[in-house]
Amino acid sequence: MVAKIGRLRSMQVIVVPYVGGWLIVALAPTTPVLLIGRFIIGVARGGTTIAGYNYVIELSDVSIRGMAATLPTMGVVLGGLYTAVLGYAFSWYALSFLCAVPSFLFFLMTFILPPSPSFLIVSGRRQQAIAILKLLRGTYADVEGEVAELERRNAVNTDGKSVGWRDLLKKEVLRQIIVVVVLFFLMQMCGNFVLMVYTARILEATGAPMDPDAITAIAAALKVAGALAAILLLDVIGRRYLLVITHAINAVCLIVLGAYAHLADNADPDDTTYTDMTWLPTVCVTMALFICDIGVHPIPFIVASEYFPTNIRSQASSVCISAGTVITFITLQLYTPMQAAFTQAGLYWFYGAISVAGVVFCFYAVTETKGKSVG
Image 1: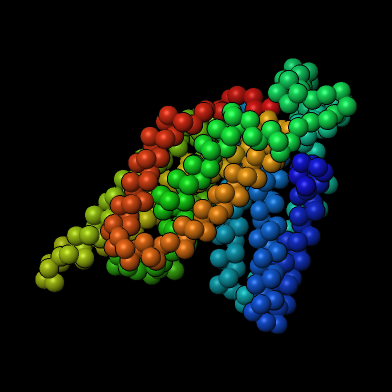
Image 2: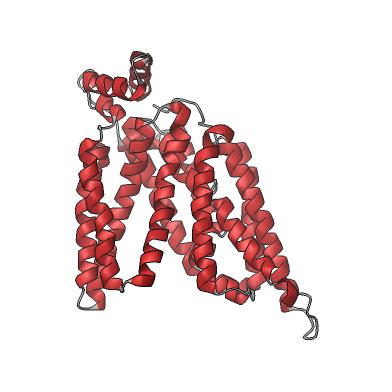
């Protein structure tokens, strides 16, 4: 759909299952009906990810593309905070009605947004794309040069015909897809989503002194702070080095957390050393969540769009993000059996080791896109 009718039109269409899904959840008379509503919302969420990131990447000037592409992540963490806060005051069915409101407001806002100039170019609407780019870039920008570069990268014919799914099988495209899928694998298997979803359970297991719900709220606020830091840093440090730095810090946090859990679990009953250090797991978990939202979490979604030219961007990014979603599901399902097999400490060390591998992989395999035209 994103490839056929465009990014903006797709986002408008996706509002229908969003609103419909939330209304089904709010009015569900039975659990199966509620699950159907949640399934529809999940489909809409997946479509929004593809259309939204493609749109932001294609609309942004190269000098601010990293900052702009991090705004969807900020929207995700703010949305989570918005839902959690309202959840304290409203029942689940009232909250479901409230969750439909942002989708409806977004639908209204789309009518003042321009279509993607890149999509217009690969669709053969060159003059319309030039007019939008002049509005976005300003009168002194080299719009003709940008359009010529887009046409060169996408090999657009005079009739507007462009390539699609078959070009994903090209050697270079396959290599880029593999790199992005590995980034999603590292993002999930380094413990990012496990810490995010099971924050309260993990802190309870390590004996954290604060109320788990309070810690979860603090962690959500730190994720917002991490997304804000990413907005400020992505166009300064770049994707590659920010991945390296954030994976390295995440590894340290999880290795320390694993060491604490191991020593505390094997301490003598009379040893109070670790009961006096229950603040340490809280610091490790919250720091890991904060740091992952600077680089480990948002960058795979960004490069899933940046690595590919417009004519195959929606198809290639959908393959990468769909693979990432499957890895997320598998990671969350494996949490309990892996904890039983590795012990609590061993599981944290495993996640830390994945981030160590992530440092090496990102340094050698990730291509920097900061400040570069992506077509």
